[in-house]
Length: 444
View 1 (spheres, rainbow, N blue to C red):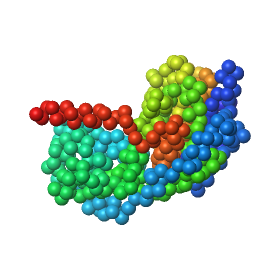
View 2 (tube, rainbow, N blue to C red; view 1 turned 120 degrees about the vertical axis):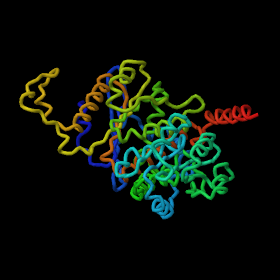
View 3 (cartoon, rainbow, N blue to C red; view 1 turned 180 degrees about the vertical axis):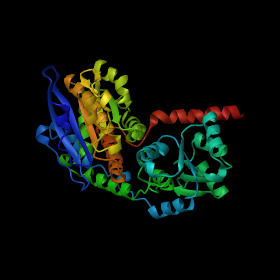
View 4 (cartoon, rainbow, N blue to C red; view 1 turned 90 degrees about the vertical axis):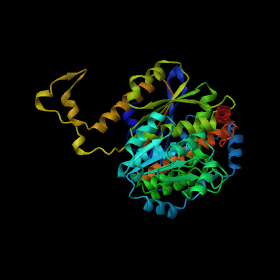
């Protein structure tokens, strides 16, 4: 089975191929393909599925999921009119500093990384209180030309309060809940502009298609309307009442749950796109914080490809055999004709391994990235390693909305399948309490 055959014939905006070993000793594979279409339709070939998703093993879990209310993130519709007003008010600001931690910034980081090239702003992400970095930002960005956006759902993070005072002489926009948190109290006292989180309770890491991340996206010049529409399409596709046959998020969640039970406790996440790599931290946060509880859930490691092929691929291919692969690629890059490789006549006969440089004249830079992935994919197959390939047809606001919504629902289902709460994070709360205890002692 060649990697090139797996890449051919795809017509959708977002697609994935899942390969799981049936019998590792005989290197047998079966596949299922699912396609996220711009029309929100999905095509599945369950006859070739590795796992019988209608088996009694899953019946009880699937029935429980069907009786679970749809998550709040899937029902929320943001108020774009308010966002457009803020975008208009701050359109002359040259520098935008977006502050946050965890879900308060990881969603925006992914959006800006993929779609931010249209922005004419200088955008800086502030996810630390590191004084050296803050001093650097203040040297680069004068108060007159800048806007600082502080994002905290609860308004009680010690980091956001520290960064407020670090930039208190700058124009500031607050993104928070309308609550009794310290940040909202400061906002009221100082008369600062605000963009509120949804009134309905939505856990921060799932708020990328709400005012939490969309406010900053609009202010830096990204039109979020198509993102929201793409998200709606994917939410409808992955609804709790959808059949397994039509629900890609549940399909993938069931498969990873099955793989974990047979010993695949780690997931090598490899993203073949600098733009899309901005979502790496969000995917890790979603899965680790939502699923990894009660000694369950896979650990995600990996990074940006093809760079990680030069180091971490070694562990994945030749290390402990407890890792499955998750490869994300872009089918149609923004590769222009001038990015075709041009080989001068006097260099064409130079040899590199088993080719001459003349062979490269048929390739663009995008083709080389695809070849890097295909070479790795073939290595995965040859070594009988289970793997997932998720491919976006292109990077656009609509496909990014679909991409985010898909991972929200996939995470939601992954937690339910392991009987853990997809919306809490007990493993990180204690450290937050400890921070305030330390500050309290120092202040005495």
